[in-house]
Image 1 (cartoon, rainbow, N blue to C red):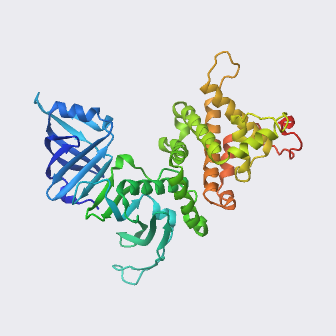
Image 2: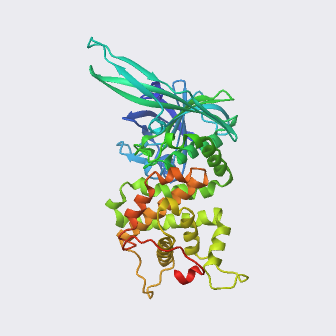
Image 3: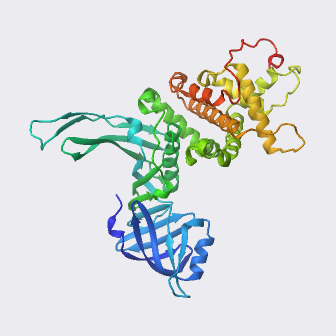
Length: 453
């Protein structure tokens, strides 16, 4: 919980890099939103903050030392103070550290309790029984609490503690909520590196969610005696949209999934960032159908780009073999690997989950590749006129599902688990009738695939 003693207390503040320009202000809280309010800031300092792409503000309120971090841009709002020399400012940070020292980013972390939005619903670990005695003013509650889960990973340990909280809203009604403490033991890793691991677990949970799962706070203990709380402002978080795949579905494989996920994050973080960012795009804007014209084309291009990155990183040799297989050229002659080859190889690798025949997947891959190349290499003389909004949304849905399935298979989620998750139904609803007119079951290709396709 946030140390409420710092709220509303006048503190002394300065921007990192401009320590000589000290100003006074208050941390305030409206609902869950935390912001710094100041009435007297020089126009020069305000201008410097507004120009910075990333700011760090240090301050002290009472005995607590506070560090605010964020990307400024629209976060700084000028207020008219009536003084031509001094102006007011509201500073809304993305992140806030409150502790016994200003945040030392290279300090080694011993342990941290992290709060992830919706993780209790994902684990679904605890069960309870309610006993209503004869007297109306008492309710007995018993519940079965599962034992903690602990995993030894590369560079840190991860532990999940489970509990059940309840609140009585009326004499005859109790509301129960699962809670999960996610505890990291980073084996004295630097704070910056540790924060990356915390974010990478958010990315993993988001793969199983209809929305984007984020962490909202963490309590840190370090080897240097720095202890405090890290908070993410609610402007950066959102309500968890629920999960299409939960922990009970993958309980037997969870440790292996964690090992592969964090190993991949360590070895190929830029690749992982591209893939997870592409999957998060549509979730961030909500229901795509409500604003297709604005979002679908740009998101479509980003997701197709991510599919090509995935193919280049994970399936380069398989895509090359596929291109050779469907080519009329002799086997000893080098065949160029086109985007359509990469996509079709990728789609066919997870065809059992997507639920389409090889011929259908080839048609979809060709359509995606042609559309992608049309938008990136636009030529007004070409007869091809791009996609309609409905077609773009359809191919976007299919492409995201294919990327998500491919990534989950890569980290060890079994094919049978994914086949039971309704992914093929989502893909069929997207493709029919916008891309393919009617379902068709094609015979198994034989001989030269190029002659069939």
